[in-house]
Length: 122
Length: 271
Image 1 (cartoon, chains in turn green, orange):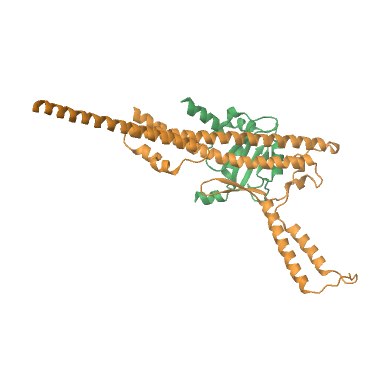
Image 2 (image 1 turned 90 degrees about the vertical axis):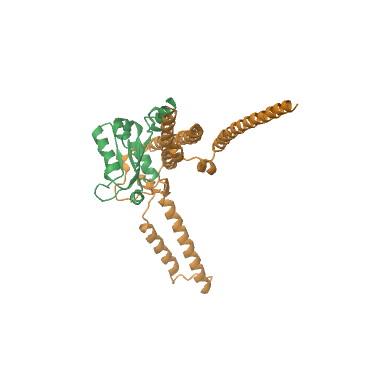
């Protein structure tokens, strides 16, 4: 059942700033439909956006929608909802933090590298 | 004399027994050494490849966890844990390299997007959300999951182009066959319209309207700066790298869980 449900998950969603979303749309991941709650698979977060808006978008793409396989989120935006991102442990959709134009990638915040430190620090 | 001979024979048998015991001990130690050596050799081999199957069949996480505490089993557990660690480190190396690659692709994508905005400076319009076409559109890059939950990126636009080319080639081949049957004059008759040409034109326009997947760069206009096309290429590569990184992350998390279980078990056995 779960594998069949996962096969319906084909889209890549983006939560990012304007340039990141523009880049992802250029790459061809954008999908717009008239179905309720499945209008767009991308959201632009700017300086005026609140943390609640980001949380709502994250919940929409991870819990409400069942057609998202991958969620790409800018690292500096993920920092604002770090608790929600870290406590999300489901296999689908896969969440990946990506760099943005104004905020280069910080490997200190990578979950895999933090695990490695824990593993070899024991 | 007989007593001396008996004593000599007894001592000889004793010495033989001692020799046999020492030989057995040496054999055991040699066996242990060979097992550890074979473990390390296969670990070195698996730097580039997966673990060899014979070792996997010898050791398995379930047998390591559920067998009774014993010195030999503990050593086997430790060697299996070492193998898993080596596999984890190799995958981590690949993960690091992929991360560097995808970061560079994103950086180059952003740089070229900025250049395209600069090149478009005369129009005083940036390539941003004002250009987005918010009509109903399908994604041209989708993801497929297989049985092992590995993700694969599929480019539907490329598939569409391939299918179009194939159908056109078939049509051309069919037209050629039809033309070979008819006899054509080399002189052009202006009064008669070329029916074949009009039919082809109609079919072309019909196909273009009917196409479900469109190049997203077209929403920014037909004549776009070259830098925007370059930016698109880098972002496409970046998306492809993202999918590879997700697959690597899943494998790393599986091995991490196995190593944690093995560590707990080895701690229990030592205490």
